[in-house]
Length: 262
Image 1 (tube, rainbow, N blue to C red):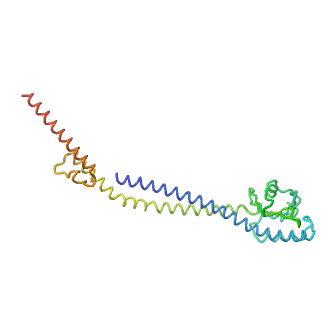
Image 2 (spheres, rainbow, N blue to C red; image 1 turned 135 degrees about the vertical axis):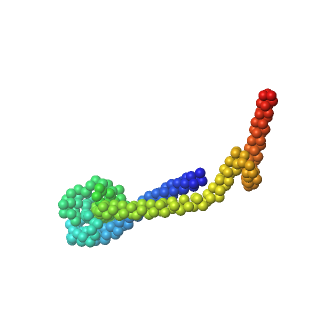
Image 3 (cartoon, helix red, strand yellow; image 1 turned 45 degrees about the vertical axis):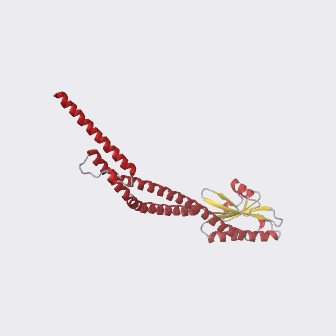
């Protein structure tokens, strides 16, 4: 019974520990995902701001967005410098791609989601979107009068982001499993140590009750043995008195039976 109690306590502690580790790992994974997304967005935003400065410098000289010089080559240089970048586009206020590191995109309309995200971010310095295979970061382009005339957009690999998050999640799962598996034996040992005194008390109470029930000759009375538990001592006294009354009743019945037999 004592081992069963220790086992139940250990199982409860292990369940609480596992739940705590799972919640902590989930929150850590979510925080890591947000931090990584913010880090990558900030990194690529920095590169886009560098490109934007070059673009707006030419626009300040009176060159129209569609007639910028040397921009296509600069976009290619940025894309080749980082393998995570899938493409970089410049589109005008109607959503038509004017420059792109992927020539097949030039002249096409960007997705409605891009246009919506860009227009919704007016007044801010960055916008973002999520595609099936890529994450998108963009910055608005403004003329010398402060009007939005288009936007720069950079697509970077979603596989890199997802793989990095998956690796971190796997590490958290391994660490959590090690913590739970490592703490479970310690919980068993701790529970047995903490319950050792209680186990002794329960064993003593059980033995004393057996002695009272079976009326072992010379047995240690519970009221004498458990002075720190007066309620148990009172129970023992009542139990022994009840047994004495039962014995007296049995003897009286036997006496009456003998008298009738005579």
